[in-house]
Image 1 (tube, rainbow, N blue to C red):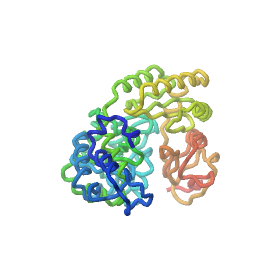
Image 2 (image 1 turned 90 degrees about the horizontal axis):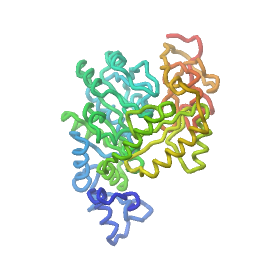
Image 3 (image 1 turned 30 degrees about the vertical axis):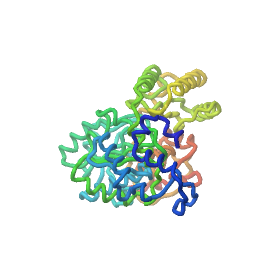
Image 4 (image 1 turned 180 degrees about the vertical axis):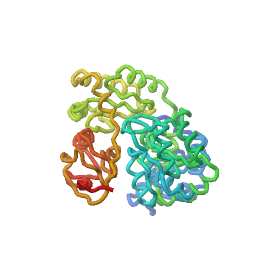
Amino acid sequence: MKEFFQHAPTANACHVYGMLKKASKRRHLSFHTPGHKRPNWDITELSFSDCLADPQGVILQAQRDVEGIVKSKASEFLTDGSTSGVYTLLYLLKSKGVEKVAVSPFSHISVFRGLALLGLQPVMIEGQTPFSQPTETQIATALAKADALFLTSPNYYGKTADLSSARRLVDKQNKYFVVDQAHGAHLHHKPWQYAGNYADGWVDGAHKSLPCMTQGALVSVAREDWVDGLRAIAPLFRTTSPSYPILASIEYAYKYPRNTALEGLAATFIRENPHRLLPAEDWTKICAYFGSQCESVQKALEKKGIYAEFCDGAFLTFYLSPATKIGEFNRLKKMLSWAFSLYPVKEGEMEGAIAAPATITPISGKTEWILIENAVGRVASSSFGIFPPCLPLATDGRRIDEQIVARMQGAAHTFGVERGRIQVYEEGEKR
């Protein structure tokens, strides 16, 4: 545990970590869960350890501190990942009478699963690509047909939404606004990009971009009249056996200091390589374009010990965090510069790859399963995409193009695929 909580000033300021550190030094025979009977850090709800279901001690203190950092009216720690936070936000919307939700077609799969689970109808924001955020006009058009807006910001390629503009649109139409900020927990240092300054509710996947253990997340609300709902609904989607090390790491993550030196170096590197690195408002995302050579580059880098977040068949994307050391980043820069020289691409190729938005085609009726390689020109009848980051490349009604097929074929892991086949509408079936 001490190796994880390396920044001593931050660790010493954390309530849950302090409790676990103290507990690890006391004599303890474990006749409680977990069954591994090694109780020093991974413990259960004991007389001294507080309880996430009814926090009154160190967990309550930790949550209150984090609420102050992110400036929320209320926040709940999650040890089940940001998916449980997405479900919580959707249930909150439903409790307010929402029936239709305007969403990006490139939202995380948990958004679509949550909508289906809760009987909410998605209204797609049309005209986007996986690499863009919706324009004000695109949002306004979809929001006019919905009761609430659910944006993803930043997206998987580092693009942040114009949250201020979205807030104005929502207020104008007197509707609700929530944000999946699973990849932007670190943005609490940048108020103009942080969802908490604009949305009614939002979820942070703390483990994605802060020094937090896997599955550590935070769901928050900015409205006083949503506080009771948050407290009541979050437990519906949260485990009754939360990991104490994860709880400690959530608090640690939000108290971890900003790494301004790394932010500057990352921004400079992106700016100096405009034809190979996707421009991004979020400094933690280094999206390197290699086109059809992407898989070969990934394998070459992994042989040298460099592992990316994901390969989508065109981009290798690397995620940084405030805990990334300058030396580690410099090694990444060196290896990417080497790869850029060894695997050149045509001028303008990256710009062309990200330009064309997908279109929604009004088709319904019978469906069939076909091989991915035969899917160009067909219309998807269910979501499928790449994993990680569980990004749908196509959703119901979206026509499949060559770029989508190439990304699916280049991905190491996918979802919505059965034995190399995806589900599409039979040709000729029209609404």
